[in-house]
Amino acid sequence: MIELKYKFTNDTLFKMLFVRHPGLLKKLVAVLLKIRVGSIGSFHISEYQALEVTRLTQLSDRFVLKYFELPKLPSTVTSDNGLELWLSLFKAKTEQDLANIESLGVEEMSEAINAYRQITVTPEFQEAERLRSKARHDEAQALHNMERKTKLEIAKNLLNVGDTIEKIISVTGLTRADIEGLHDSI
Image (cartoon, rainbow, N blue to C red; front, top):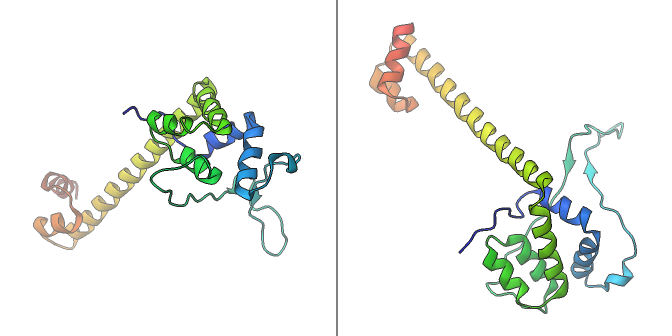
């Protein structure tokens, strides 16, 4: 089974999908509200920003609150439940998942899947995903380095108060070589 390269796990794909294909967003809203698409008219995508409580001024132009929770889906989705179809698209992890949705013959789902495929091949989207992946890696690396630095500092303090290397190994999880290296630098 071939996994999807890009999943609906971040807002970049959502934004690009619905900005470049606003008709799909209108169809999604119609499904969610269980109304006809034609009755929606025009609308805008809103973002909610945090305000300072007493002055009601914007706290930051870099903080936007978005919330989207996907309920549990049944194992098989049918063409008569539009909400489940859209949620199954957002939950799709493989090309087979997309093919299963397309096989139901629902026009707007085929349109959405085609839009997904068009967007995910663009250099703009791929660069955004590359940068997002790099940022996740850099953050994980920074956390790892900070954790190690903290453990080394604890080990150094324990050495200074005369604790044994065995006790420091059990407390910090560092190796004997790490602690002996600290012992030499004290």
